[in-house]
Amino acid sequence: MSYIWNEFNIKTFPAETIVYRDGVYCPDLSTLPDGPIAKKYDLPIHIIYIGEIAGKCRLNLELGADNQDVIISVNVKNKKPAFFDVFIKNAGKKSKINANIMMHNMGGELNYSCHARHLLKNTAIFIKNKLFAGKNAVSKLSGVSIIDRNCPECESDMSFVAMVEPGAKTEFMPSQRISAEPISADHSAAIYRPTNMQITYLRGAGLSTLEIKDVMREAFLNDY
Image: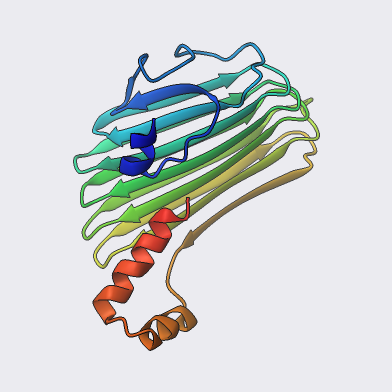
């Protein structure tokens, strides 16, 4: 699957895979069927969701196996209105889910919603949401982390960060619903901007204003 790295900047490694392209499950690129994960595998599970999205799109993960590592890699683009919903449930004791979700809104409308729910004690869900918003793009990003009752000792983190071009409109709505004492529970939202030190360094290296803009954009997109 080296083309995934070349085209979508998705890092591949030895793993059981579940692959979706343009919102459609790809059995020829997957080693596991689409659906809930109920057993433990020797390798980590890598869920890959790539391509262009439009209309209503959805990614579901229901993890019920103990001591299982799951990595979610998302890299999607939309030009038309898109509604992208991600639902993650962890009911596997000592199982960890790490998600990196990269979205490119190049000028359309994007509505993104992420639900991360802990259904058993000692579970972990870490989600890093990133958005690049082009000129005149309209983006609404929301997320909620839920720790159910009788589910102590969980680890939860959901972050949002966006790099936006002039004229883009971006709205963040992160939230938490915690009903048991966790080990950690964090959420955040931020707009990414180059620092004066970074700009000064790049100018000192001889880059023009346009080249600096391109370099900072690539740095944001490739910090994945």
